[in-house]
Length: 77
Image (cartoon, rainbow, N blue to C red; front, side, top):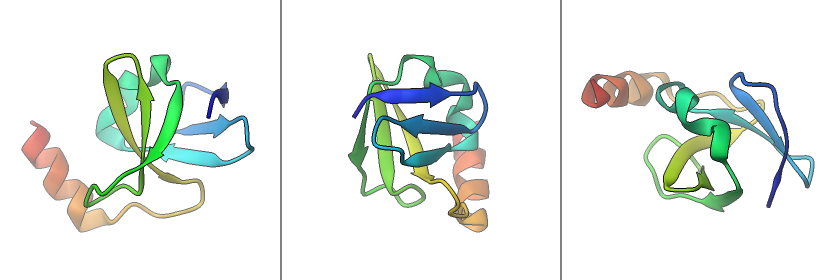
């Protein structure tokens, strides 16, 4: 699925009209996105793939699991 709109913020919209929220720790990696795929990650339901970078996302309107995100951000540091 190709990206139709990316406002350089935390939301991206795909050709099919679906909207996705970018995982906060991955925001700077999003400019080369190409496709979306299901994920079995503990905090995201899907992965947007572009080039050599995969970025965690959840559907637009969904909420990030706060405790899991905080723990993951601590691990990413």
